[in-house]
Image (cartoon, rainbow, N blue to C red; front, side, top):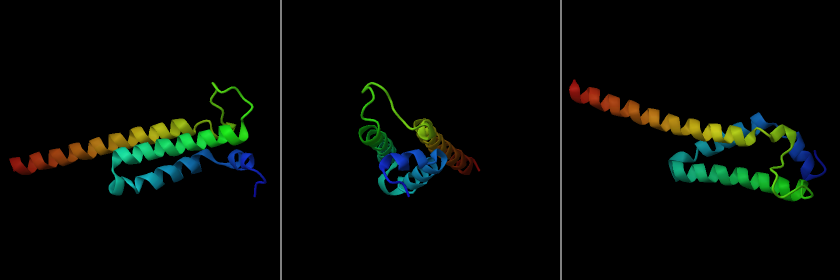
Amino acid sequence: MAKNLNGYFKAADVETLSDFLVKRYASRVVSIGAKATKESMINTLVTLLHTYRQKCAAQSSPSQLILPDNLKLLPLYTLTALKSAVKLVVSNRNIGLQTAQQLQAG
């Protein structure tokens, strides 16, 4: 167990954290919608980064994005998850349209 917040950030695993966030928000898409889910996921990431900045790296320049080395890829993983989700929704819509067209033609 870490003795301070900085210890928790430094011990965090980026793949595990990003997997948790994606699964957490994927389960909410049906209940709150895709747009609200996307905004919630982004807000969670921003809050996490802001908390690290405020509590663990307050002495650094305000214009720099400061992250522990092990979490540097978290924004990229989040963006990738958001873009993959959009592609999945679009491809599912296309599959539905193709199926409907085939049913009408047949």
